[in-house]
Length: 288
Ligand code: PMP
Image 1 (tube, protein in one colour):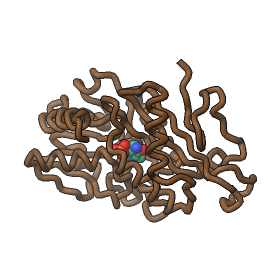
Image 2 (image 1 turned 60 degrees about the horizontal axis):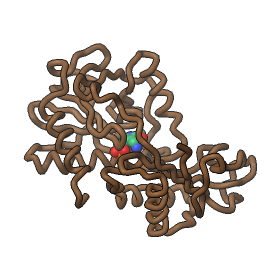
Image 3 (image 1 turned 90 degrees about the vertical axis):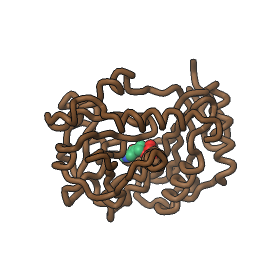
């Protein structure tokens, strides 16, 4: 069935949802976006996504021509118009239509697109058996150049690492920063477990501050687990007892092999499975 897409100020048919070839989102990847889940008819962690979007826009001096309240209403309208009760929302804000030059100030108005659709998930069996990953040779963008907190429309850095993963017949790659420390996966955050302690690279190492990551840290602490954010090396991943990724689409997924080294006993570990279950319940709880 054709979707209804929110474009700037109203819903339009999918076939009418078009942007200009002079939009700087297309010409330069100039803009920001969010990927958001809908569980049981409720938009998950909407406040956190709004905050990240508006902060990213402010950081790149992208004027938002919609208040948070109006944008949240537009999201609700789009979800409802497409009859989505469990799905995925892609929200993007581009710099808008300009000229062929870089100058963003000539773009008169940012362009807002909201797509609410069903979600393409990893197959369920991958959660049971666990996923294999490789280490990417593509270095994560320097965090002091463009902050990884800006979820920008330019994902080339991550796409290059994703190509390396696919070349090696695995779905994901781990990216390291300019100093060699673990940053994140191409579209997910990294966690390991060592001697019962949950370890995650600090966001300063060059990762997006994932909304799933924050929820999982909270749930782990509620479970009485200790969570420590510290720099991790490739070696730390190789000798971890458990290894998992978190993200809006993937939720919590166990990693069982990296660069040909088996993690733990080769299956998603007990803490990974417990946190996956806790996350599943949390996301579907009425009050969240
Ligand atoms: N890192 C990157 C590069 C991502 O694109 C994503 C997915 N948006 C994440 C981490 C995970 O973030 P979140 O939990 O907010 O989806």
